Image (cartoon, rainbow, N blue to C red; front, side):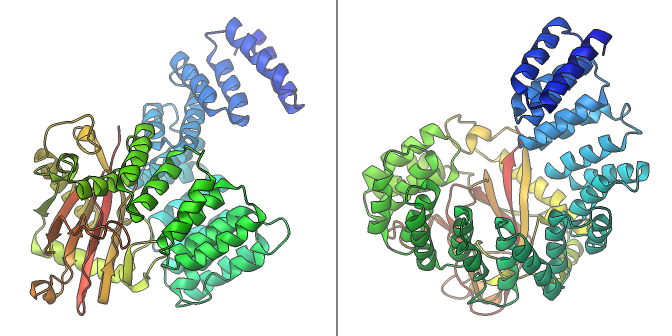
Length: 560
């Protein structure tokens, strides 16, 4: 930075420190005009806008600094942090790659690169990057925190120890204590995990995520009745946040207790009658509880709200009420505002099926949209993957808010883990995805899946489910997916008995929604195969009565 530019930057920084952001912004604007080729000044101005929460403007300035000085590591790191805040970690990781030589001895560069790679789902690369950061600055508290978070997400055997080491450098950090509770639970130390989550709820009663975690851990411990009662004491305190009520209702909805959820939300709305978030949640819970008329009354109170979330929820309730033309019109409005809304597509397809509209065949009936593919794995590979999955389920529980009923589901992203068996499985799944893509119809820019036919795809979420005894999956959709999936590892003998027990059902809506419709596809599970289908299709399973049914599922999303 030149002397004059540096003087302006220092003066502007002083004004900002004094709270005079208006004059500081004007001074930075003047400096950018007078010194348009000064990369460090652009970076300084970017920092100012970043601190003010003006992320798009900050990113523009950081990228401008990089264009002027491609080896300016500080600007690259700042741009990556900003992209992370904007929810674009893939772009952040890609931006940092070319700075590797310039940042080779910069621990902050490697830490931020690791964080970006982790957030982008590139956990193996993140492990290498965070190792570089620790080697350069082993006692750095921020690096220890990033290493601990990565260990948790990868379910590493030493994750509790890594978090303990980070806590030694970041004493009392509530986010690390939150992660510690999760790590303890993942490693079978549930009683200890409950102690930590309970302490967080007690010491930080306004922390909504801590309440939710404590409820999940209580549920996993077998507490099926009072698992959420800790919300009540916080909700009763003067000045309680409406978000506590929303989180409380969400965990009850997540264990199929929508009537209780609706009652809690009614209590909240007696305090905040005009809060739209509470009203929307109450309407949804009433609908799920079979009170569609009461739900419609809530929707009518807020008829002026045009947000797509409201339109999708209104459309779903109108389907319940049998007002199909009105539902279709409402859902079409939601899709006009948000063309990639999976939930709106799933619901409008129910309308089309009930009406006999040919658009249903366009959406879900074209050849190649639903396929079952044999995975390119030999028997020994399948056996080792199956054995690992069974071991993971030893410390897994039935989750809150998921489709699995009477079974267990692994926590976190399965393919973030470090076991080589899972890396081999992921590679096999990508091969099967390529085969599926090759068999799809041509690109169609108006179709929610075929519009992204040729875009790069990635696995965005991954988990394993074990159904034992009388388990099943309730009908559901994955609202963040382009494709949904099920790969089969253990299959009960009764799949070949009358009644198709344990079979996958596609297109069969949840109870209370278009009940005249049945399944579009029923698919016999076969060990070593993968089923892929559009995420806009409702899917669930027929219950089993005995034996074990174990799957690995994941979402596919476009990266472009």
